[in-house]
Length: 80
Image (cartoon, rainbow, N blue to C red; front, side):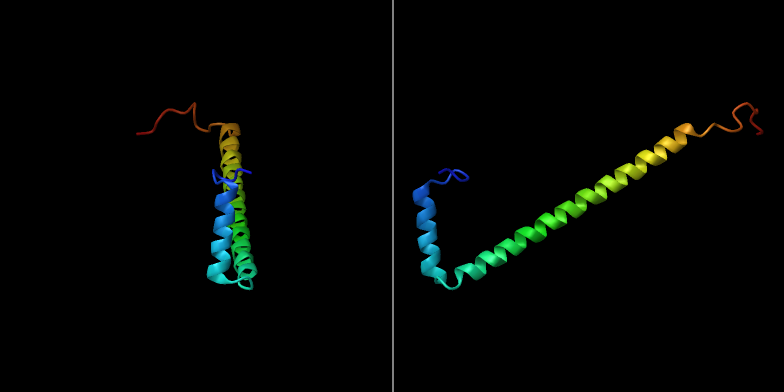
């Protein structure tokens, strides 16, 4: 099993060290906290992506409106 260039032995060693440092009862709480953090990060990134899509669509719609709009006063000479 290769996970981000870590070998299985390294992952097992990290797991053993985590159990020794935090205890077996504290690890599920830590994992829940990490899971909530990852979920919040995903929600924030999806919100940002949606905002970018909305803004892009608005800009495109405005550009289409200005292209379709006939130019007024194009035949009149300048009055300087």
